[in-house]
Length: 230
Ligand SMILES: *Cc1c(COP(=O)(O)O)cnc(C)c1O
Image 1 (tube, rainbow, N blue to C red):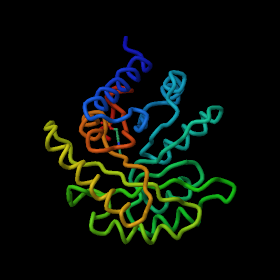
Image 2: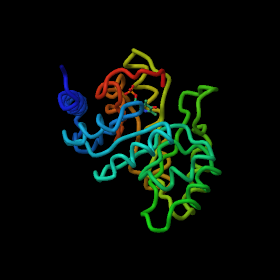
Image 3: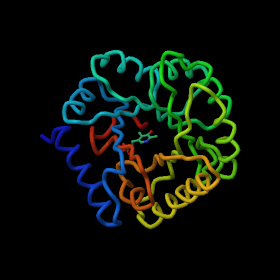
Image 4: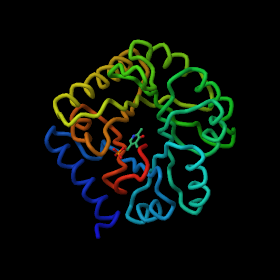
């Protein structure tokens, strides 16, 4: 049986190898363990193996897990699509939200973030490969949204997140990730001071690291194949 600790080691070794390939420091890349559909005991096991940050897609499921694991100082990241009727729960329970794709959602998170908590850390989800059905702000509108969000209290803009169309073709994934990286650099050239590029998952983390990802979101490679098609 391969344990979660073994798989964590394997994923960290993949990140290290990808870094060596392109001369990056592995310390510049954070691993987010995507625990959606897996129970609190799996999160606890990963935590015990040294994993401090976890990503969740479904708000209701996540809040139950967060409450069951209150004894651990886990950093929780919301990475799933955000409906306005869920923003209050997200603002109250998470440290990060990667999936902000419109101003109305950012405004709600800003208003609803409890004053007793530090600012919620935000990434803009960018629809970098133009998929019509997928969420995410269009790349050409990202600067405008970033500008509007900058003035909101209770939330802090940290970077960009993407979920490109999956492909087995390394070169193709690299090209898509490089487009996101270029947008990230462009926003920073405009003075946004972003430090987080959330891109790369189980299948494409090497391409994402080569393109400049600072945070890879890994589920399947750590916890196994999910029972539902999420
Ligand atoms: C599920 C999910 C992941 C993890 O994907 P894997 O392929 O299982 O590593 C990463 N990011 C987001 C936004 C997800 O929804």
